[in-house]
Length: 287
Length: 265
Image (cartoon, rainbow over all chains, first blue to last red; front, side):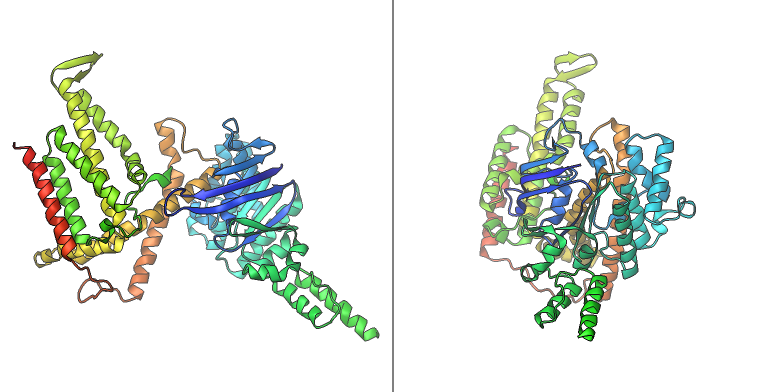
């Protein structure tokens, strides 16, 4: 699975007073089994970017190929593309519509015209992936669940398509901290189980730092940075200029370093910071 | 596709048409509709077309926008066109099986289709050049004399503001839910009528649920700010009618008068 964008631009409402250039000549290549964090301010173009990835919107100019197939080509079957690239929208719980959770999750696979057993297997598997008890939950109405549970049903609905690339647009927006952690853990587990590329759009530097191996920073419709996560957060000044900042723990370590304490300044998680600080303290005690 | 619907959309600007008092514009639109229904031949249509083109020109709204507004109504227009063509009795021009095309039918069909096009194009100028707030202020003011006989002018106006305000929101939401279901393999664009109808369920259910949720949230938000309806409410921007409004109204009434008079000459 390879997704390649070349000089891709997208303009909303062209030639009206509401005209807005959302993407400006983007170049990016996404390969198999990556975990990419997409960060950027509101209106930076990240949501427009992810909607291109499965052909929901078509570029105003430029080229987008998925596994070598040009998406604007009439020959390319968009249903196939959408099966390969699963997209979880912001607040996906508002798209639920069926009477039971089972039926709602089965909606995607049924659209793929799979047979009954396969649909059943996929629904069961995706409910497991998002931590919903199959037997207990399958016949309940999705509308009587809590916000976090609804969201998991919605994510399971996309997972049941068994995509090769899973794109999640701010999957934790509006959830409480424990709901947030659970969803992120499940995403991480899904990635580690293998054979899937995950693209996580987020406002939260902490989430991206913890999970993603590669970070793409959007600003004003352009890609400002694309590279390894550790590398990205080294440029804290630049990120702050874009009103993004770095994870608090990274910032903390950078401050320590400024005070001439010899610690690494590219840590991403509290765990890593703990090891670094302990190393330093032990080193000092030995002196 | 869904973004093509421009009903009730406001096209910001500060042209002469934009600056006209909302009440005057509503009155003119109202008179325009009445005039349109008085017309019974093609010549006055030329005047109407000229009038629309002039107003559009002055308003700085691109003509493309008006045409786009007509697109969703194309089905109704085409439908009425064919009903008229085939179902009007008269001199038979040609015949396909049991379907007869008559001279009168063809005339009537073109006539009705044009009337619909002018009706939509002309009235859409009102919403395109009047912000929803001044539009409803205008309606409220125009209806206020009827309050004495129990017409809830303010409530009606408020309902209209809310409805207009939510058209773009609902369209945006429709677009979003459609995309979300398409991402799950839903197909809204092919198949026969029954399948297409079925395909709408995953779109309509969430749309209605969200609309009800939104309505409730809005009601709570309004109550939380002590909204109590029309009595003794003051407003930030009072509508004012000045000379140019009166002059415009008089000129337009004169023009419409001529068009109506053509029927009787």
